Image (cartoon, rainbow, N blue to C red; front, top):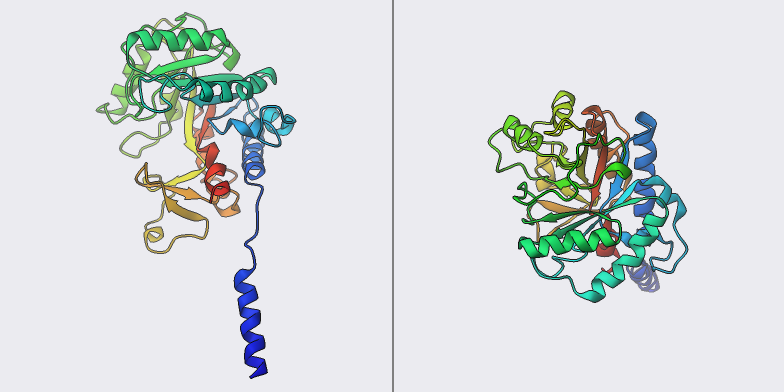
Length: 318
C-alpha cells in the first residue's frame, strides 16, 4: 500500500514538472544569425532581411533596451508590414499608437546600418501617395500594396523610378512585393510582366504556382529593368511556419506530425506553426544540399526575405 502511494506521488510530481522553457526571442535571433552566416559563406553579398518581429533588435524586446548587436549585424535590412496602413484593415490608417510603437525599433535597426522596407496595404491612390510620403520622411524603402495577397503589380506610378543599376540594398529607391504568381498563366508571363517595370528590387517566391522553381537564368532575366537598369531579386521564405504546399512537406505528416510541427494557422490554411528552434526543422531551411535556402542560393537570388519572424509571439503567449 505504501509503495502504491509512493508511486502515485512520483507520477503526480512528474506530471506537474514544468516543460523546458526557452527564450523564444533569442532562439529566433540565433536561427536567423546561423542562417545568415551559412548563406554569406556561400555568397558574401547575399542579403538577409527578416520581416516583422522587430522586437528582436533589442535584447529585452523593448525600444529602449540594449541593441542585439549580433542579430543586427547578421541582417541587411528589416521588413515591416502595416506601418502606416493596413494594421486593422486594408486601406485603413494604422492606429497612431501602433506606428509610434514600431518606429523606435525600426529607427534603431536603421541606425545600425540596416535598410528598412515597409509594406502598407492600401489601394486608394490618395492613401498610396500618403504611404510613400510618410515612409520617405523616415528614409524607409516602401511599397504600397493594393492587395493583401501580394499577387498584382500596382497600376500606380513607381515611387522614385530611375534607370540606375542597383548593386546594393542601399542603392534601391523602391521595391515590388509580388510573391503570389497565381494570376500569371506561365513563368514567362510572370517574367515579362516584371521585366516591363522599373522597380529597383523585387521580392518574389522561389517557386511558380505549378511548384517548379525559378532557375538562375530566369532570375537573370528578372534582374533587368525595362529601361536597361538592373534590379535586385530577393526570394521570400517563411521560417516560422511550415507550408504544406512546399517541396519539403511529407504526406505522412498529415497523419503523424513530426515533434516540431505544431498547430495550423487559423488565418492561413495549410500553414503550420513550428518549433523553429528545433534542429530538424532548421535543417530543412538551411545547411543541407536539399535545404530551402540552398535552392535559393543555387537559383542565384540576391537575398532572402524571411517571414514569420514574429513566431516567438505565439509561443510566448501560450
